[in-house]
Amino acid sequence: MTVGELVAHGEGEMLGIGAALARVLQVGDVVALSGGLGAGKTTLARGLLSALGLEEEAPSPTFAIVQPYEPPEVRLPVVHVDLYRLDNPEDVEELGLDDYLHDSALVVEWPERMGERLWPDALAIHVEILADGARRLTASLPPSWKERWPFP
Image 1 (cartoon, rainbow, N blue to C red):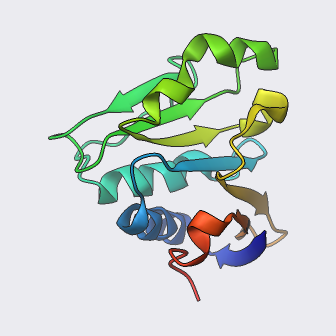
Image 2 (spheres, helix red, strand yellow; image 1 turned 90 degrees about the vertical axis):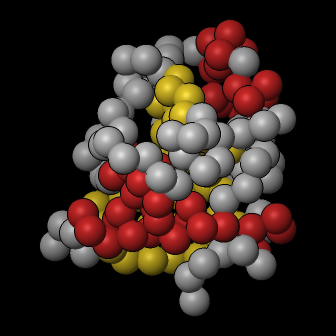
């Protein structure tokens, strides 16, 4: 698996990273966003959703857990998932996330709550807050993302 690394200085750059990912996102893709509270996972997801055409600001799905977006609201069906409130990896089964992959892309925050259940071909991005407030994004690129990764 190839590793990509980016540094984002500010909210605008995090939104831009999400927008760049949106340009190459396809049905069946999983973007898994990990990192501590306030790291910028939801900001990145908002940038992605906005670039796909969502006009209002996407709410964090912390309480809904699963928030689907469908055309014409977005150009590509996307399901934004926040697993923060799950206590057991077994609870993920009840969400039926695999079913969404037939006709949607998934953006999953807190994928570590899935245990070992994360899809092997998921684009995994870890967001870390640096001392100066910038964010370091470290991406694990599965083969399906190596040619599509939109960053040099």
